[in-house]
Length: 250
Length: 94
Image (cartoon, rainbow over all chains, first blue to last red):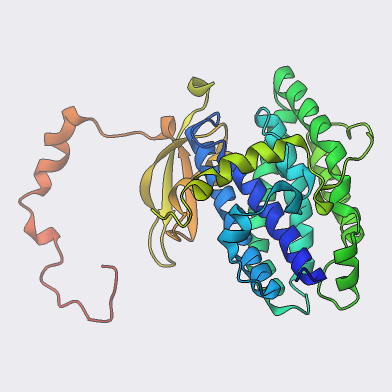
């Protein structure tokens, strides 16, 4: 049964899973070998978070689905990730813009979730907050260098931020599942993360000599299963092998 | 792009009390990124507690041509080795 707590664990887990898949696409294609390794590391951190969160969601649901069943046998309408993480990688600047926006959000989220009254969520957050601190730092370093680099790198960084900016708002929107859990101290109320997130991201952009992107109509729907057309293609690639050969291991 | 990133030598200290040891090299645009790249490339399995990076072109190396003059004279000076002492069992890392 999809209780609010199941839905909340799925939302956090799906954010991590889908972004891990996206970042994995950079492997062997990053600008440098060292960035291949860095992005793969970040992807694997996220995959570890996703595995724990989805396993927990499956246990709570009580329908016999483990983390693999949830990752490989749900269709896009059942995924609860925010739209931001399913956006195509674009060029390196788009990916770094997405990383900055998401890691800064996820850091504030996990930092507070450590105090959750749900022991499992608190434990996941306690471990993940250190990983995400590094993800945020990695993105920060690149946004500073691209924003304050050459004319071309700056142009791309500005374009990258403009691409992802409309999708940031969804991270801070309350949804029904979360609202039911906030009062019990299980979940973090998303709107409370907006101010510390804004403070951090604005600080990075100011140091990089970049202006805040112009406000655009916010895009949302992921938490309700209404995704962009990009998620279906991502899932097709991610789920193809498991669906063609159920239970395959190697 | 590839040719523009300088090379860095990476030194990792595995534990407190040990010295930094050269583990390899990597490319990075600047020192701060070199430390981060070193963290990702060389400490993913918990290998270190401290990282140094040094620009490769800042290292002055001995020349292979000077090998005989540099190293052969040490070969027969056994009295320079502390082999005449009992090493206490408690002394680690000697």
